[in-house]
Amino acid sequence: MSDFCENARHATTALRALFPATPLQRNDHLSAKYDADIWLKREDLSPVRSYKIRGAFHAMSKELSKNPEQKLFVCASAGNHAQGVAYVCQHFGVQGVIFMPVTTPQQKIQKTKIFGRDSIEVRLVGDYFDETLAASQSYCKEANGHFLAPFDDLDVIEGQASVAVEMIEELGRSPDMVILPVGGGGLSAGIKQYMEIEAPETDLRYVEPTGARSLAAAVKNGAPVTLNEVDNFVDGASVARIGELNFSALSDVAPDKIFACPEDRICTTILEMLNVEGVVLEPAGALSVDALGDVKSEIRGKTVVCVTSGGNFDFERLPEVKERAQRYLGLKKYFILRLPQRPGALKGFLSMLGPDDDIARFEYLKKSARNFGTVLIGIETQNAENFTELFGKLEDAGFAYRDITSDQTLSEFLV
Image (cartoon, rainbow, N blue to C red; front, side, top):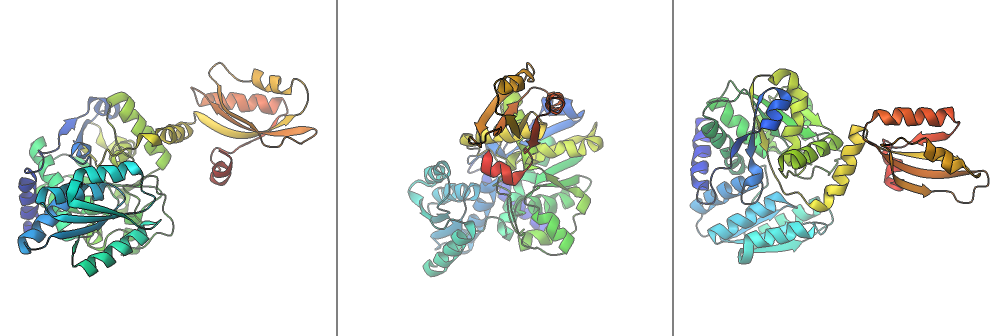
């Protein structure tokens, strides 16, 4: 283990050729909100706006030191890992071939090309990542390249541990708690192994999105398992199976120290950090901050570090994020109303709305009904309690309605 810490410190020193240590910043807003000393380790401020550059750099550096003739590196990624590999390929002057799914947003493709410039080639293969990964590994073998795994690699894990090295140096002491986002496990495995030696008194917590709990499933099973379904909203942490090497470092984590953050709640945190602090976080980058509410009773008066792992947020997703946040907070609901087809019926419904209620959606679903019409209605309000009052008025007036806000199947088809 001491070798691991030494390698992590060496990686940290070598990284200074690329960028200065990412800042560790005390956040006054969060500190006041939770009555604690809250610090953010701003990995969203790295050159590629995520910590992924660390593992890519360390792994490539070690391979080149062992094999200076290696000039081809290959990876598969739909986002942050691709950008990190591209940046590092350009730095070392080697060739990189980066496989990305055909469905990858153009913004991510263009950013990868900008970071890699003439040193990389992007190949779009497959609608799903599994297809992309298989194609990249097949090509790497044929071309005699070196494959750079996104997380299941010892050198990558050592590189990600540089986050912990910087964090302790910048803070000047060991924090009481560190909250870590978990996807494939590269970051959490690296930081855990380093902190166990250098700051064993620090309490570590691990956060996964509710729709991709690969660490929790592996801990329960005693070995990595492949999740049957994964919600890809938190794309930077939506991994169906935690890495084998990563789990070997995380296997002894207590189940009660692994938290699940609902995707819609993460959206409220993204908006809070953007609107209050001007900090742009991608969904995975907001995980650790979102989990503060889950540990608020434990952290009062303590020093807590949240690793904000990435800030590659596509602002075209902002309307979806706002929508999901409003639903989670109870400020927006969709319901189906059975409206009598008589003069004044619509006016009667509208008179029930309060001064803070706003119609965001109104659509007749059945226009041929003789006596009743089925209407899809979306209402936004400023206080969740307003819906209690509205639904009470509807029931008193004899209006039949169905709240479909939480009905995922109907919402997908109708909303």
